[in-house]
Image (cartoon, rainbow, N blue to C red; front, side, top):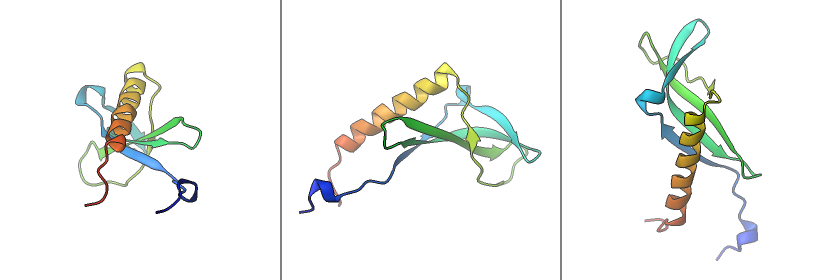
Length: 97
């Protein structure tokens, strides 16, 4: 068995769907995007970092470009709630199939 001190976890990340009523639009390179997904990372110091991703409003695939998450209480709550839910799920893992 591997000793816990020998295991280095370099990143923990989750993807979170943004409920429709919390979605927003932002512009990049002259194209408007509707932000629909968050990627939330747990940093080594225990804090969270989040980036938003979405699709061009005009349609099509568009580039996979990250956007800053606005500092809004309801988005901060979404990130914190998602992190808590992910932590609970990780704690209940059943190992590899």
